[in-house]
Length: 132
Length: 310
Image (cartoon, rainbow over all chains, first blue to last red; front, side):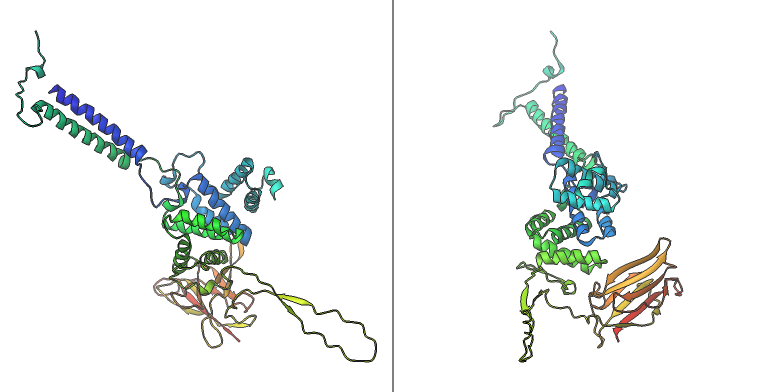
């Protein structure tokens, strides 16, 4: 009887381990219907740059703000994914992305595009001055 | 000599092809059951109870509304950069496996059919998207995008040099200075002209109040030509005062062509606010319209304003 119990427990533990590995590592849950705030930071930056280009074209700050608004976390539980910076304030986010691009030595045209939007939002900082 | 409990159990050999004893068979069965139970519980826990926190979400995982936002942004990007290859690549990330140009076309149709194209910036974004997919073959467009096509899909600026008529020089026996040669002027082809009477003055009708339970609190604008045919793509300016001062917004006729007709546009009023409308550079201001709940159903009143050429 003890052999049966031990066998059952050991194989159960092995199965549990396989289940954890499969569910968390090999085949984790594939999410659908996600929010903008859950986008990978790279895509969020790309999206911000695209909106900034639209702003350069039409000069409509209100429209740019509206387009960036979906990036905000706004208390959505799904957006609490443990990342270091969560977007709560759009001008602050634009300033952050712009300064990040400057620090990374990104394409100067991209930086100028972002600086124009940051400036329109009242977020022109000294490091951005040379890209105006 | 002491024996364990298992050793005291009598296990007759099973006379079978496998040659396994009943005990060994039991161990295998219990092992399999344990493995299956562990695996099942592990998957239940990792997929349902505590799944991995979603990170590094891609555009194709977004909800439909945010996918549209992303596609609009691609249109804005294209409008600025004119980089079709980049637009193609970005659109491809929204619906992998689908023709990226078709993604742009479908998004435009969805936006226009659901009335999400409201502001001038929206229209510009839609035009940019149209410019992406319109020149492409085999793209199925399930909506009418002509109303936005006041600019050609791809801005082909082809200057055509024409000459002014040669100045006639009076034949006279006197010496006259030679006139400079013909001055070439550049005509730029901006595509087919829209069917809009340009710079023609429009007359604004007196706002007619309506109690419309389906659309309470709207200013419904109708613009037509002298024959009464609806005119789409006309910018309508609305003005109102609130705590922040004087406000103005421009919206276009034709964005709800599917619902009413191409000359129709509407604007949702806020209760208690007084509005005036006019056609941008084409008409005078309408009389004031105040959003009040004077309808019997306690709905806000709606107004209809008509503009027609003089």
